[in-house]
Image (cartoon, rainbow, N blue to C red):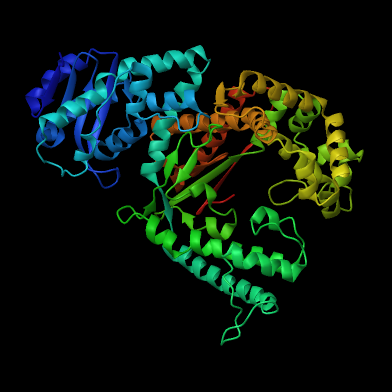
Length: 611
């Protein structure tokens, strides 16, 4: 028999605490007036275990609901949630509670199913999969139509209670599966990361509308200029209108392709960007430039600021998908802040919001390459990184048999010239001829690049590309052994594996007789150890930084993460100590997973987003 207790007053709250306070594990859920923690309210709070569920009518409990805060704030009680980030953000904005010690069954199920196409990790799907329970979700939509203070029907209360009734047992089953697969520590990290991603969504980041919109106007001018250049080309092959403009839609592949072939004399297969980038012709160059300028208008124009700046906070609140990629990397959407152009003119629009505040921006130096060095135990790589050498110049010196010091500009006394960041200045001719190819190979191998792509990227013959890769593996034999071993194991086990943190990417629904698809999986297998561990390194640094901020009571908040880059907004007087702490946490997080290679984390204090 179900034991559901509806709580509507102070006496009910007090009575519930007698049952809840002694528990070690509780399930928690909320019902809200909408999906935005910034503008919507919690209407129901559900807390309980498999034997009893308390459903708190928040409006009728009034101020007495604060009695339950001791349970939510307890470090000694494990709180089980499904999609913990959602409930965490609402509890944070509605009541100012940064709920600790949480476990998320959604995150756990996602870790178990990464790579499985169309895996259903919803509460309904998980209950069916792990518990054999069919859940009726028909009442779910009724909550969105309600206002704070409306009366709830019995069916709604029963539905709300059911969201917590099976959570503890279900999460336990998920946890045991994760433990069997060596993913226990990873799961705990991801659960703690849910709090940080929740903080970032609530914190948001300030975007200067004036600066952004001014930039958008510049983009329009750039697009007009690029279109003028295109028009000059296409006037030669198109009919003209009354104003001598070519009658062609540059966004239509059907119209564009035959005219491109006519203009270039090249049998072009399609107007796709990857195809066009392989071609060398003035009209192709101008077309790609026009597309780039148009993307700036459509993706980063005035509509971006109008749509994404929250009218209440004046900030951009992106949604962070904690396990956005199969590798474990985060993703960002609505808007995608991880895809903002790297150029300073765009990023300097993201700033500290109030006078007297700064942004501390820090990134890991060569995170994936250092992970490659640690996993492969390649002596030459470790030597270069341990001695703070320029890795790509050092690689090139070994591949091409050139003295390492000859790559750098020297002063009249023979000393290496350094730039403002303290890095050695590389000779342009050495960079283009030797260092860039070595860099392309190193990064390419992590992503499974073959000689064909290397040849296209560097504009060289296939035979030359094969020779370069052969020389590379001769210089760094441990890297070849490692990549071969990773690929062989993945093909045997049918999943990609990240050995430093235990992440898995399951290869499901694969036609193993299709060479092209198998080759794609081999590339994914090679990349998983580096992107997977990189994701864990960054997440661990984020969790430690949140702990540092909370412990020290700093006037600071984490506002953004972009793969290996972290941004913290902080009052100016505390900026230096926060920068030092952020760098320390990043370095120690890296060495937690890879202790054989030194890490450098470079922080900078600025008024805007740098790097």
